[in-house]
Length: 266
Image 1 (spheres, rainbow, N blue to C red):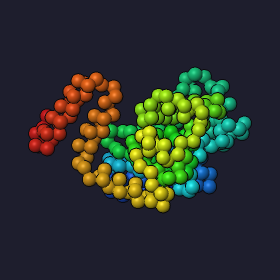
Image 2 (image 1 turned 120 degrees about the vertical axis):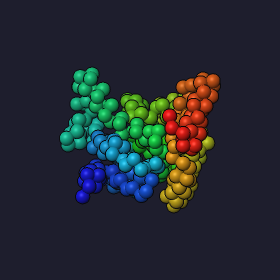
Image 3 (image 1 turned 90 degrees about the vertical axis):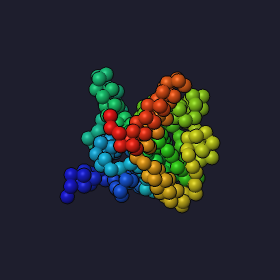
Image 4 (image 1 turned 90 degrees about the horizontal axis):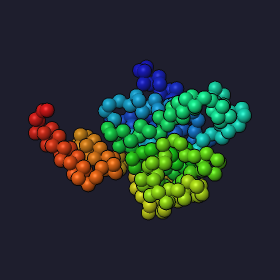
């Protein structure tokens, strides 16, 4: 058994399954009886998957078993007993500043690697995607949703804030005013609104979700990898550049592509 296979067994115990088929990796949340409620153990597994993906992987599909993508944080984290072996919220609140900051930063690793420049990631979302579930879907580059999808950011209504790397992509996708309203009200966002506002790329009937994501992954794999990496980097950085800076970045990227295609080294 390889080290990756051994790790994969422990990840599945935490509710995360990894399968690799050529250039595509599929990450599945596999706690359907708990509606894929998330725990620190699941976050550690997700972060480890990101660190240990083979370099041959180009597209990562994030999906979930059962009727819901993820019901959000395991509510046991709010209870005095907590989750065995994990700090509950009372323990976190009592921690020193650095320990608390480091703990949350560790949780965020599970949500932040999905936008790596060498990958394109797709979230296939059905049913409820609440709180941490919503933020996990937001971590991906693209979202394909079932027509029954219901997004909600519940943290503020619980006296907290969304802290799992979801606020920036949400604001970039739907704009500040709508992002503020979604977060503060905690209301549900369905498939039609998600597509209309740019939160989702495509909505399909639930029984067509898997096929739609598979087709999209195939289309993404059809383009040359280095061109995809350069294009993603251009688009990711566009928001922080002026028009002239972006033009300059385009020229530099195209020069690299032309020389690579012509076999001319640095």
